[in-house]
Amino acid sequence: MKGLPSVGESLAVEIALQLADERHTPIHLRFLTCRRSLEAVARAKEAGQDVTCDVAAANLMLDDSVYTVENLKGKYKLWPVVRSAEDRALLWNALDAGVIDAVVSGYRPRSADDLALPFEKIPFGSERLAHLPESLLNAWEAQNRPCRMERLIEALSLGPRKILSMDEGALPAGTTLFSRGAGGWKVVFEERRLER
Image (cartoon, rainbow, N blue to C red; front, side, top):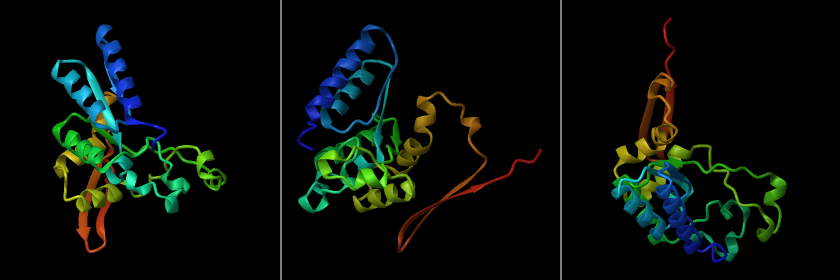
């Protein structure tokens, strides 16, 4: 979106990284969307700075081609905003390279009343939570698998836990099944009851 240029994000990222570095403080950056932000994080990580970052799933699935007159509907007034196809490709590359640590839902629901407003008055948000793994895998497939599947699954499942320093042993017992059929990807979690 022209009102939210990538330079605003990348400048904020540079400043945040510099402040954290001067204070020797770990930092987590949310919802990266563009080249310069990714480059700044990559440089900071290479220099040994304690930095993590994430990307919203919508930024991996969509690009700014959704912003057309016909699509001035609430479902495309996302936060963070989606950028160019080139930026989307760079996000996938950064995810595969480990520059991006986690993929997050970006879930920020809005009411039906909010979504019925004129586009400029609709709050930014995203209702993309139901079937997120399937939607993300289908977008990954449609974009010719731009990163390793193992890396995508790790960033989607364990990435947020690592950022929050959560014990991996606290994961629910069960199995996640991934299958691809004619209708696209399906993801099913089968919970196992622990015997006492």
